[in-house]
Image 1 (cartoon, rainbow, N blue to C red):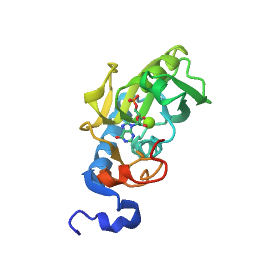
Image 2: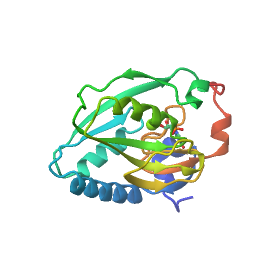
Image 3: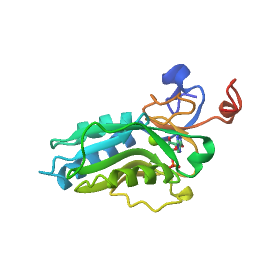
Image 4: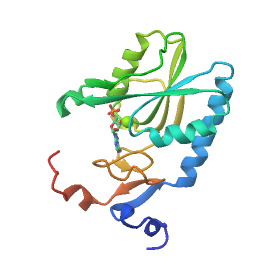
Length: 196
Ligand code: IMP
Ligand code: MG
């Protein structure tokens, strides 16, 4: 019960079965990626772009590990329907505020599964003719990948399991766990909005 420290998170972690990637492991890896970005983009004033909301935690920690001048901006997307999401059709509900033409853009993403959403967004950004456009992902789930997307920076490979924490949610909950964990099976079966 006390072995993994889950009890210190109280109600927030009652649905969590096990920790998959610890807080320390995440912080160490984010620090390393920050160092690599600092080296690779020296003198380039990169623009880090993320999709709200899942990337918020990674973006905040990553930017504090980057030791060169950077800027950040966000887009927000929503799926037209669950079916259209399966095809990677998304609607941009908030566009970038900073023009990216001629800029070195690093796209920062929390998790990539099929890659369809990211593929759509990258195509949209490429049209605006950035000087470069690369991808930095913290959690990579390679087993369901439908589109090949080169990843310049990658934090962890994850198994094909649904995970929560460090920005990742289940029905908007669990984002504020500092680690990544698996949920207990009964969490998925309970609740009034089961059909959503
Ligand atoms: P895809 O790469 O187009 O399949 O979509 C990835 C999106 O699905 C991410 O941006 C997340 O919002 C969501 N997602 C994928 N895997 C997980 C997970 O294990 N937990 C929470 N959200 C996930
Ligand atoms: Mg996301």
